[in-house]
Each structure stands twice: as C-alpha cells, then as structure tokens.
Length: 350
Image (tube, rainbow, N blue to C red; front, top):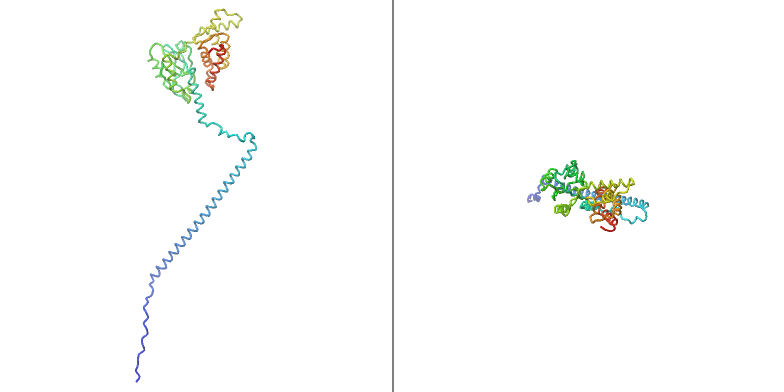
C-alpha cells in the first residue's frame, strides 16, 4: 500500500528588516554637508589664486610707472645739461656748499655780540642829583628796560652834554638795571648815596641791547664793576668854551685874518674829552671814514699826541655817525684800521 507523505516545507529564509527611513535621511544630509565644504574650499582656493594674480599684476604696473618717471627725469636732466657751462658741471650744488641757516644765524649773532661787548658803545657819566633826565619805557617790540626821552632845560644832564635822547639805561652806581621798569630805576637813583651818581648808558637801539646778539651778563657786570671801582672813568662834560674858541678861530681864518697866538693856542687846546678843538670841529656827521680822515689831517697839523687821543677821536667819530656805526658789519676791523691811520697821523705814536 502506498503511503501518503506530505512534501517537505520550503527552507526558511533569513529575516532582513527593511531600512529605516530616518537613517537614510541622515546619510544624505552628511553627504550634502561634505559636498558644501568641498565646494567652499574650492571657491576659497579659486579666490586666493585670483587675488594673488591681481596683486602681481598691480605690482608690475607700479614698477612700470616708476620706470617711466625715472626715464622722464633723466630726459629732463639731459636737456638741462646743455645750458650748464662746462666749468660748472663738477661744482657742488648751492645747497651743499652753503652753510646751514642755523649756523649762519649763529655766526651773525656772534659778530653782533662782539660789537655789543665793546666799551666804546657805552657812555658813563657822573651827574649831580636831580639828573634832569626824563626816562621812558622802551616801546614794543622790546617792551623792557628804560631809555632817555628828553632832558630838562638847564638840568645836570643837559649841561653835561654827553648824553643823547634814546640812550639806553644800563647801570646806576654799579648796579645793572637792564630790563627794569622806569619806577625802579628812578628809585635807585634817588636811593644812591652822595650828591652825584654814576650812570651807564648804551649808545644804540633797544633791539640791539636786548636782541639775540645782546652782551653777556658777565660782560655787563664786569663793565659796571669797573665803573664802581673807578677803573672805568666817567666821560667829562663837554667844554663849550673850547668849541666856541675853535669856531671863532675858523671864522677868523675864513675872513683872511691871521689868528693871534692866543687864539691859535685856544684852537689847539685839548677840550675836557681829550680832543683838540681843531679836531673836534672835524666831526661833522658826514660819515665815519670822512670824519676820520679830517681828524687825522687835523692831528697831523696840530702835532698833538697823547696816549688817550686816538681812543677819544674814535669815540667822537662813532658818536657823530651813530646810524652808520649801528648798521656797520665788522666793527672791530674798522676800529683797528682807524687806530692805525690815527697812529700814522701822530707819527707812529699810539
């Protein structure tokens, strides 16, 4: 008998779950982000390369412009060389050969100071009190110190005759008053001992006494010390009688009359300042050299000689031509040359 057998069951297949939708979305997002990063990096690299290319191009353009400018300058210089003399091609430029402005200015100040530190630029007088001087403060731009404004008629200063309007007050009885106001100067004069007082003045403008080339404090103190101890003597008053006698003698000679022995003696008599009257009348204010020449001739004729005579003549020439003296450069050189000329006029005596 046939036995009925059921067919065997089919083999079991392994279980494989279907993929989750969320995991698939995460994988896609990660891939997208990687793509975005790679795209940004590629873009940055492209931008950097482009920027580098532009910078290199700009640098080349600037170099080309600089080369063009240099070529243009060389072309201009070649054109200018045609107009420069051959002997001047090797000459240094003016700016290199010239002194710097600061050094030149310092040299000018030094030369001016040498002229200011010269006792012939100062006048010392001894006057009885009251002095008969009207002082005023120096006007701008100086605005410091005091000077002579005017004289009282018949006063001590007017009778003395050595001072001038505009003289700068420097010292009172050995005390420096440069830069002081008028009231303090007057108080010092009043407070000074004795019936007379020695007063020192600068014969010149305030801008020179108080400017860049002003005298040093040490030099002024030394000058006033000499005034105080007597080594620097005051100038004596002008002798009006001798001047009048010289004028009288000159008028007599011009009229054709011979001067008497007494008049001749009076004409060559030394005045109080140490100048023969015949020499004093040569000071006409017509220029330093012109007045000096006349004085030299008068000295040669007079035959008078003294140790202090050349210095007195120089001071008189300077006082008579103060404007020219203040503007003169090389005062020391002129003074030395003038002293030699006067020594020659006096027969070599100084």
